[in-house]
Amino acid sequence: MSWKTFSALLARDAHVARRNFLQLLVQTLLQPLLFVFIFGKVMTTSGLMPEAYKSILLPGIMAISMVLAGVQAVSMPLIVEFQFTREIEDRLLAPISTGWVAFEKVVAGMFQSLAAGLVVIPAAWLIIGHGVNLSFAQPVLFAAVALAVAMFAAAGGLALGCSIGQTQIGLMFTLVIAPMIMFGCAYYPWSALASFPILQKVVLINPLVYASEGLRATLAPQFPHLPMMVILPALLALDGLVVAFGLSRFQKKALG
Image 1 (cartoon, rainbow, N blue to C red):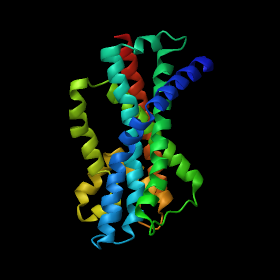
Image 2 (cartoon, one colour; image 1 turned 135 degrees about the horizontal axis):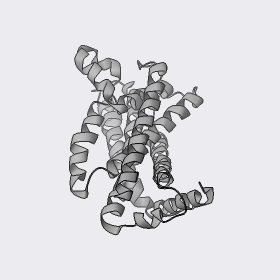
Image 3 (tube, rainbow, N blue to C red; image 1 turned 180 degrees about the horizontal axis):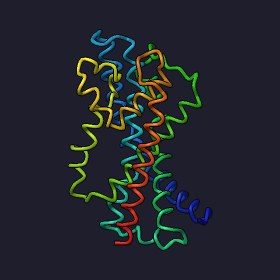
């Protein structure tokens, strides 16, 4: 592989992201910050939610922001490039293998996913104010979980972008993204489903559960969460599966 070519492709994606910075910022942060304001500010200030809920909520909001940003950053341009502009053909002519062209998309999506997640923390502090009790005592574990979540999000965007058409985008968010968010333990810890034992087991197939619980375990370990020895292997296994599937779909789409 030519690292110079790979870096040039990354630099081009970075230039496009800078050019559309305001659009990306609004697209990435609007929904998470609305949830932070309603659940973290309005509900707690009115007394409908305890103050501690702020710290439970933020890791989950961060997980949602990372997953949505990574999926959208990779899937939306791919759908356009494959079906309308055919811009992908220019990339495929680069002196680099097809697999590395796809992996560059994943790496670029990971950067956007990480940026979206990290921005949520200071933005939420500005909105919520006092009462946010997050811990940064485990920076290595936090970095490992964040990278694993970002890779899953970007690789998931690659898989979806190569598997659906423009007319199916709405269906994707209705049938895939929305249920993933609602049952992804983002707004509540996994232990809160103890009263629904069957549902509690079924949601373990949802990747967002491990993203939310992993970030909660590293940022708010004072609250119940899945063991890290379960979270990290699950995230790594999911990353491997989604990356392999996404690369396979990309190569089939590019060569077809």
